[in-house]
Image 1 (spheres, rainbow, N blue to C red):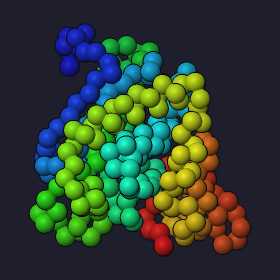
Image 2 (cartoon, rainbow, N blue to C red; image 1 turned 60 degrees about the vertical axis):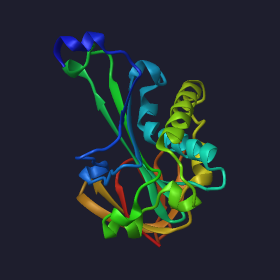
Image 3 (tube, helix red, strand yellow; image 1 turned 180 degrees about the vertical axis):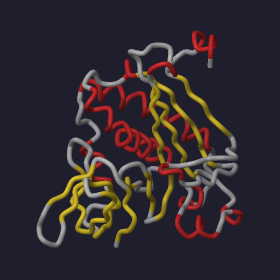
Image 4 (cartoon, rainbow, N blue to C red; image 1 turned 135 degrees about the vertical axis):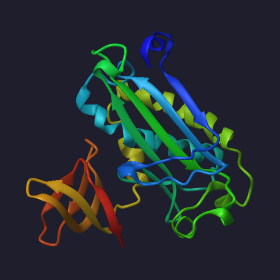
Length: 238
């Protein structure tokens, strides 16, 4: 970025009509044709709560913001949130979130951290051209509502909701929790979580009891033990 860094202003919003190398969490490929809303909002740590321990909840807050934006455009729908970063509608994936942070020499100040909030929402795509695996596991707003919705409609509401939720989060750290709890896609389901423990990679299965107020996923195994996860991947659910 070099000397051009001094000209950058934050927050910065980047929107793409198409992506040729879209990717999601864990390096998964993100199919991103015309009609998919794809954006990255870059903010600085100065715009987040002073308490750094809360920063790990940014993906959950972003999910709540994205769901609220869809609610505004399509009030007839009920968007759910799958821990930690997916939007679901009628049991199928509607969107995803990927957040990356940068600090040190890669930004203007070593005291400042940049957060790139990447969001993809399926709005109005030609579903017939989608890969067969995508057709069976994902959906889009126009398909769910049987009417044409433009990505820019959702973009406007998404930016409004993100700004509102982030500002509120600074004053009320748990402001995202009730909404997430009501929308939790996994709550009450038997799930399997792939996680990294002291003994290495491990898959645990049990009943999902939602998320804790610190953002950790809660899972109760058959023996009654309650496990919490601050990182991992839910690989299956009933």
